[in-house]
Length: 199
Image (cartoon, rainbow, N blue to C red; front, side, top):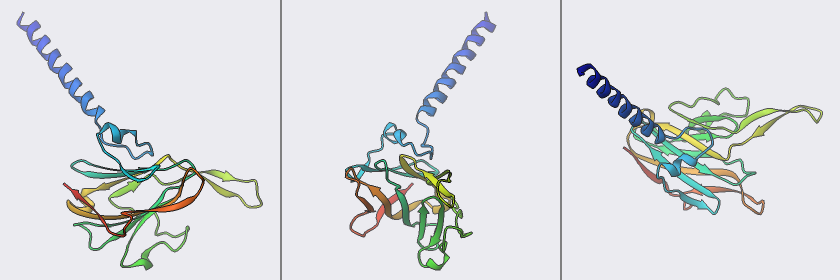
């Protein structure tokens, strides 16, 4: 009888542990995959940048996520200036078909073309870039084809950027509105910086 009671108790404990794990998995942090439905499930209220562009910020103990959507046909590439406690000076984080970072005060360290070895130097952050999607061989010279996700996402490590105040300025490029007009969106739109407290 004692064995049965212990067996049932152990089974109940295992069930509770599994339930807690499942519950935690339902509230897992975002995955940087270009799909941003999980931000609403996590209770994030978007910042409206444009009628069709919503900006999301989310963080846990280790990372900060930044995400935004855009209309189909947009590229939604990004240049983001960031100042934070662990950085020696402000950085530009760039996301297009390639990603990279460089000090804003030393623009000569930016990649000087698409073949530059200065791309892919992201440290402590990552984003979903515009994907290379095969080759177009219909012309005289083959050209890369590109495919884009419906949203852009970044994940930044607090170990790299530090806890405390982060000052952020974003320029989202090649955003197409419903009439087909292409423009850039600045956030904040008055030239100031957005202050985010990384806790």
